[in-house]
Amino acid sequence: MTSSSVPVYSRDEYLTQETRDLLSSLPSEKGLLPLVSQMYQYEGSWHTQGLVQGIVNCQKHFEASDSDIILATCPKSGTTWLKALLFALIHRKKFPVTSSKHPLLATNPHPLVPYLEGDYCVSPDVNFSQLPSPRLMQTHLSHHSLPVSIKSSSCKIVYCCRNPKDMFVSLWHFGKKLAPEETADYPIEKAVEAFCQGKFIGGPFWDLVLEYWYESRKNPNKVLFVTYEELKKQTEDMVKRMAEFLGCGFAAEEEVSEIVKLCSFESLSKLEVNKQGKLPNGIESNAFFRKGEVGRWTDTLSESLAEVIDRTTEEKFGGSGLKFSC
Image (tube, rainbow, N blue to C red; front, side, top):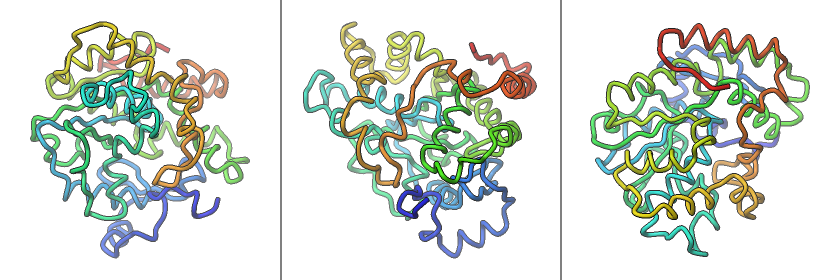
C-alpha cells in the first residue's frame, strides 16, 4: 500500500518525540489486519500510533461547550450515516433539507462532522470555530477516555453501536478494500480470534459498548444509547427520538421523512462526492459505502466463526440487560 493511501492516523511522520517515548512504554500488538501494522494499548483500548498522539492532544486541548453534540461510535457501526442524519437534523434551519444546495449533496459527511482524535493526530492546534452552532463532532473513544470537558459540561452524547458480527464483517471488508494486496492471504479465523480478544482499533468492543450503555442508564439526559439495528428498522422514530433528546423536536412529520430520505444509504451512495476522490485523512470517499444492511454477516462468516463471536458476546454482556436482535 502506498504511503499516500495510508490514513494519516496510521502514519508516523507527524509523531513528536514525546509521543514516540510514550509509545515505547505501551503494550503493543500486531494489528487486526495488515492495514494496521501495529497497535498500542492506551487507557485500556487499542489504537494506531497516530491516534495515540491524537487522543493525548484531544484530552489536553479540546474544550467542549455546553451546546456541543458528540457522536460516539465503534468503528464501522453506522458512523457515516449518523453523521449525515445528525448534521441534517440539528442544522435544518440553517440548511433546509430540501435545498438543492444542502452541504450533504456536495460534501462527504466526514469532513462536515470532525473526527476529534483523528483531527488532533497531526497537531494540538485544531480550530473548530468554523463549525456551525451547535457544534457536532464524532469520536471512537471509550467514555472514560473522553476529554474531561465533554464529561463535565452539559454537552450531549449520542452513542451508536452495532451487532458485533456485522461490525466485524464491515471492518474486515473495509480493511480489504483499503489494502487488497496486504490482506489477500490474511486468514479471517485469525482476525476473529483477535477481535474476540479485544485487539482491534478502538477495542475491546464489549468494554466500549458497556461503558456507554451503563452511562446512558445512569445519566439519560446526557447520553442517548441507540443501536444500528434500531435505526435501520425504525429510522423515522429514531430520528424523532434523537431530536427530542437534543432539544430540537419536529413541528411537522414531513420534516422527518425528508431528512431520512436525504441521508439514506441509497441517496448518499449515489452522490458523486461519495463515489470519487479522497478525504483529507487519505481514505477514499467510497470506502465508507458498502452495503449498510443488517444481518449480512452471513455472507462472510461461517457458522463456527459466528458462534465464536456469539459466545464471547454472551459472556461479556451477561447480566447487563443489553442484547442484539441478530
